[in-house]
Image (cartoon, rainbow, N blue to C red; front, side):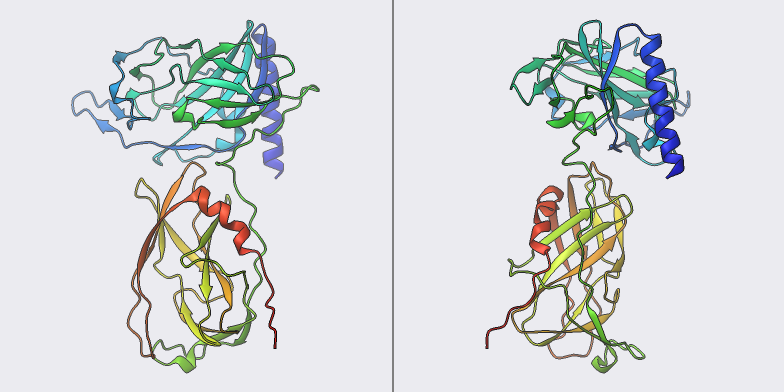
Length: 386
């Protein structure tokens, strides 16, 4: 925590110095989250040894004119990690690129600085913005249309060169925002996830307000009622149900539809809750093990544990017929920018039990929809009328 505070103070100092050295510059807002863009692996020219990244097609830009290489792309002279301490220490070898930005007021215009760290010597098939790039004042409803950009690549696909490891400063210019503007939305900069991004501007006292980052912000994990362990597993044997652990007093929830899930993303882990139905007063379950989440790029996130229950072992749950309860699996953390995820459960090994079934499944989820399901997994005590 101390290191974060120190870095934050250094970042503020750096911003202040920048404003003092460059005339008529006022910082309106800056990214304070960690936005990570999937970065393709570069190809290497066997003769020149130069690395080239062909950027994935962005927003179906294939019908736009490809203007080829642009020059005079501004670079950031200062250490970018001083401005954005949250990206400090990110492994440059991973196939992700931090998409950080800053909104300023300069010479009676509003300027959006989109910073790009070079992962290769050449980047092709890139897209910055077009007429669809606007700033919406959420209070007044006024739309401020983008005017131009630096380098001059407005509305076109382009390529650029740069020294690997340096940070480029793509700039988009808008009309000057009114002095009393406080909450805005930025549209039309897809490579920086600005598709209606809500942003709070600097307040009157000069301090920063946290930009709204939905749907890319992290969650606060909801409290999960831990089931009571009735009896521990003894010499566990999947073919002997008497050796399985027994639990009761599970995290009960209101009845929901079959295959209802919810997700919570934190910097340290991803929590996936599954709604389970009790058909009997004593029923067996098994979760975890080789279960994974996989994102659209093919990256896998392993299941590390099952909250309050065994991981990759069969166990009993006691309750009432008609109970609905939650089993929560803990996976490796998913970056904020991921919008869709696939849940893969391999088929379990056969075991000796009546109705034995640990079937596999593959389900595709929209993460935002699963986040909206969090309210369905609030603890709901059982009510029995006799």
